[in-house]
Amino acid sequence: MQRSTRIKLLLIVASITVLVRLPFFFHDVIDPDEGTFALMGQDIVDGNLPYDKLWDLKPPLLFYFFAATIAVFGKSIPAIRFSGLLCAFAAAWLIFLCAERLGGARTGFIAAFLFIITSTLSETGAGTVSEIIAIVPLTAAMLVMLKDKVGARDFFFAGFFISLACLIRLNLAYVALAGGLLLLSGRFLRPHAAFFTRICSYVAGGAIPLGLVFLPYVIAGKERLFSTAMIYAPLSYADSQMSMIGAMHKYICTAFEPRSLLVNFPVLACIACGAPRYFYRMKDFPDSTKSFMTMLAVFAGATAVSILKSGAAYEHYLIQLLPFATIISAFFLDGLLDTRWKPLVLLLSVLYLILPARQIALAYEPVVSRAMAGERLVYGASYEIAEYLKTANPGSKPVYFMGAQMAEWLLGVKPISKEATTPSNIGREYLMKALDGPSATTYSELAAILDKKPEFIVKPAVVYYLLAHPRASALLSEVLFMDYEPVRQIGKIVIYKRF
Image (cartoon, rainbow, N blue to C red; front, side):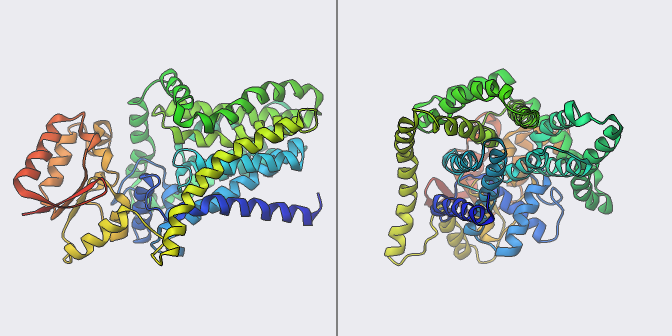
């Protein structure tokens, strides 16, 4: 492909990404985890190590990403969404390059387009979530291996990129293992004389990001903190979740729910039809292309296993599968465009695009109306909560946020306790025990926080993560009744002030 054509395609992919994701810049909360990630990133900007003063279950590189965004762009929700847009664009272009090597530029463009649409309109995908960020190095790892001749340098960068992905989404460690076994087998093992070199290259590439992230803890003498955050707490979390079979059942049921079926069905249909064609056509391709297709299939399978093993079965976890789903779908659709089914495919594609076009138009509506009314473009309860507390609490007395982490970050205060960085973690006793010892409970942590006598308590109308802990829930109700009065309700958040 000529360079000028490639640049035009790059600009088209960038333009589509901006057009689709721009209206989601201005709403305060798309995924509540964004607020937690912003708090963790801010803490790094303030000079602390991840997990030292604040704590969340995710790997450290995710928080460094948010810290970099805050350091460059300042305290701004649109800036966080812009960094997510950059990740979505980078992932889309890498997907284009992977699919192009399999089926040509048209296949690549279809795959990139499908990724932009499906990732943005999937649950919380329009936000800057860990899945969107991790897809970038994960796809880059695949791309460096899509070559006819793979050398030690390619193994090094494959290990490097997969390690980056794991330090953003820890479940992708399964992909690191499966990818390593694949890359070190089959045609990649020949000549055998290079076997040891390639193993060392892959391991060395993977060790560098891990070593750089771990080094500050060694210097600070806090290796135990790192191992707790990266090993013990995640294992405790995974052990407490549902089985792989249970997670698979939940995902299948979710995919066919009426609220998401219209979005999911076309992609599911393309995968269902495209996967058999994908493997059937392998025999018609040269050996190098067969290896590419095998590698993509193994990466997809390992990613699927890693999602199921995480057990929580949240819908947005499936975003990690979109690179593979869109490439297989594009491979299938592009093949149909060269057959007598082309008119039907084009018609169905236009009909399918009506739904995302409508959703994107609805997302633009409040932004356009606010612009026409001369109001600020950013909106949402987080801004109102932060502004109210800034006025009502000029002395910056302690505030306990039981939700609304984004407002907490905008206000510029630190969480009242390390464990309350993600408020719902208090409801997970297995995490409390991993952090604070076997005697820690939801009740003891909540009691310790309330003993600090926060001036304000910012809580959802229903604190869902305390429903399974009646003793802790009763304690909260008692303290609110005895010592606090509700002074403001903003959306679903109630603000209580101490007498």
